[in-house]
Amino acid sequence: MKYQIYFKAKAIKDLKKISKDDAKKIAAKIKEMENNLQGDVRKLTKHTHEYRLRVGDWRILFETEINKIVIYKIKHRKDAYR
Image 1: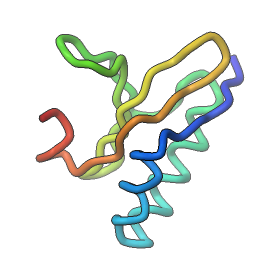
Image 2: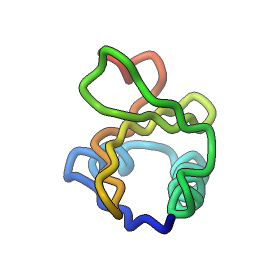
Image 3: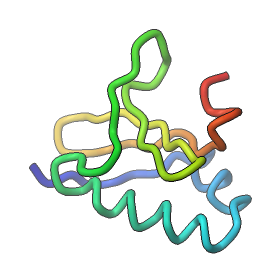
Image 4: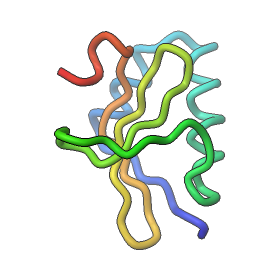
């Protein structure tokens, strides 16, 4: 299934705070998710957002709808689940 990716304003703000090297890695992994949620994706339990994508020490928290992925937050692993 092919997904379209949408970023919430908070996710864009989070991405701008990250170093350029890490931001490039994160962007590449998000791009891979367009095709059937590829990557280190895991469904979350007891959390506001449905899924997380792990990219090194970074966590991308998102939800899926019919044909789209909505990215809510991009946080370091120590801060992601607070």
